[in-house]
Image 1 (spheres, rainbow, N blue to C red):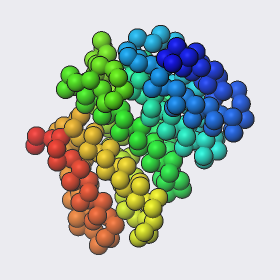
Image 2 (tube, helix red, strand yellow):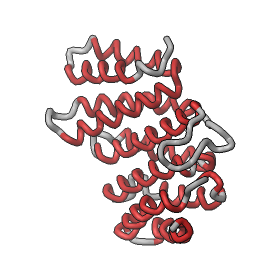
Image 3 (cartoon, rainbow, N blue to C red):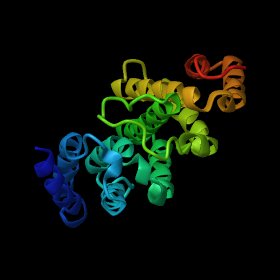
Length: 239
C-alpha cells in the first residue's frame, strides 16, 4: 500500500498544477488521503526535491486567486503536509507564511479559509513542540527528524501573533450563534495555546498588552477576545 501511495502522490501533485479548479480540488483531497500511506515510517527521508515539489504545488492553490472552496481545501492539505515535509520546509517558508497570513487577514470575508490557515500554524507549532520535547510526532508515524526543531514558529512570531490575535477578535465579533465565527475563535484559541507552549515567554508582552486593552474596552466582543487570549497562553510562559 505504501509503494502504491508513493507512486500515486506525484500524480496528485501534478493535478494540483495542471487541472481546472474542480480537478485541483480533487487532487488536494487525494494528496491528503495518500499522505498517511506514502510517508511512513520515516517521512523525513523523502527526497527533498519531491517534498518541495509537493509543497509548491499545494501552495499555488492557497492564494486569493483560487476559488474559495479550492483555497480552503488546499490550506487543509497544507496543514497535512507541513509535518510530513517539515525537514524540507525551508525553501517554501516565505511562501507558506505569506499565503497563511494573507488568508488570516481576510477572516472577516471568509472565516472558513482563515480558520484553515490558522490550522496550518497549529499543526506546525504542535509538531515543533513534540520535537522540542524529544517525543515522536503526533500520530504521523515519524520521530524527530535529524535536524531537530527549526524554530519556524518562533521565527514567524512577530507576524504570526498579531495575526492570530486579530483572527480571535474577528471571531469574537461575529453575531451570536454564527458557526463560522465560533470555528474561527476555536481555531485561533487552540493555535495560541500551541504557539505559547513553543515560544514560551516570547509571547507574554504582546498578549498582555492585547488583554489589557481588551479588558478596558466597552465592547463585549473585545473583552471576550482579551480573556480568551490571556487564558490561551497560561501553559507556555514562565513569567
